[in-house]
Length: 589
Image (cartoon, rainbow, N blue to C red; front, side, top):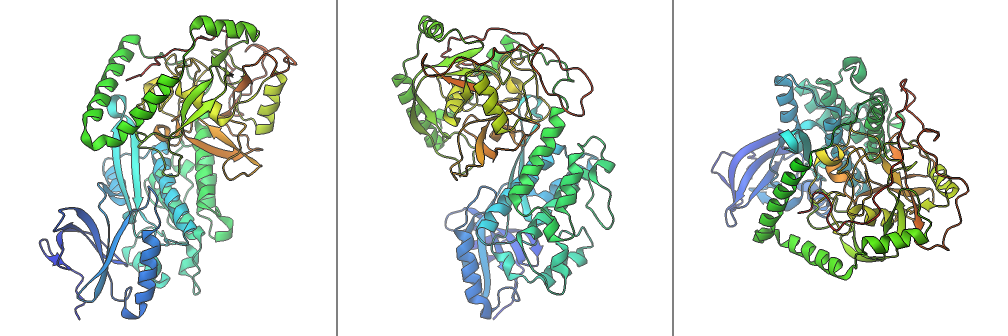
């Protein structure tokens, strides 16, 4: 039996894979990019080291392979087949276009660049998403380091300034075949950062999910600071004063020496990272001057370009899924009678002309994600037609004033009470989503294509209500694909009564998180710096009691400002919202 692991370009493995090049060498084995001879498709093939995949471990290898193959997530490399070459086991995995995170970090270092907080957060949160799914399946990576993270970067938006990363973690399931001592020896031989958690280097190493938390924390630190944490290291903000204070707390928890002192789950780590840049963004809410919105001429040019792109996509036979989107949209549009402005005004008159509230008529809408929402998570519900009663929704985030500062850092209970004080209630998640998508059921409130010029890029652009004229839905509801996240009255599918669904404005990945269909959930007692709300009413004059107190304007509303903010909060002015729905929202193809 041969123990050959090394192959050259052109060699054939298992009579069906032609070697293209060597990609990586690790304690697990040697990984090649190969071409399947009969299909001409490229895959990754890892030849497992004999001490990892010895004959007496055959059952363990097969078990790990089956479990890994059945574990799916957008941030995990898909496993292909398990096979042998001259007695040496190998497994294949999908070929992912991109580079390793190590290569990207080195590129930044050579160029003298540092990752922005939102870039590092976007990457590490996807790593943690992969960890969360792996942990649910009973897997622990232990060897999580930039070499084993694949990443594809694209730049989008005006001036291609928006960083969008797609991350894939490799080796799911098979790292369990490598003992901790071998991993520690490999790390020592590299003479690099200590990505391996301290408890895995002890005499009795015990692997828990907290080990992967530690490794992800090292990566987060390295991306922010430019060098990994070695020995007694300085906290990130000491190295980079531009970072928010909370970054130090995040790193300290992730890199705690004892696993009991770290984040206990990947989800806890993700949530705290989100709060980090929410705190950073909210500091700018009243300090920055208003940004002039795009001129209508530029907006029309953008709309024309978007329309051209979508026309071409519809003609592409490979985009068959988009035809399904078109069909369901067409079905809803034809069956949804859009009321005339006169009908809307009569309805509002009967309802007492509520201040700054928009009428959304009864009828169907598309709830959930469309096939075209390529940034969506697989766990998100697919599109379905849902019938809705008519309702009224605040045109702006509370206190519902044009150019007012949204009320933030409120718990679910506080938001519920403030709506009740005005004779209103919190919106359901379905009401919120329908108001966001407008009559044409767009992906974002302004159209189908993410563009930071309409509602901002998610991180540093918290702004006064309605100040971005184009950040509105076809029902004329503002700031639903930007600004703050918003409470809804709906419990998550887990039916946990202590949590409620939150919609809109997710800042760590705006291209994904500002879609109308996207949702997260929070504890009802959570009051985040980037968490606000808006209120709804049934469109029935007998449905709601009269307000217990009138809506206050921006001059008298008790608005909260960030604790670190010393300047005065800008005053807003009352401006009647446009109450008649528009069939065509900005950005329509």
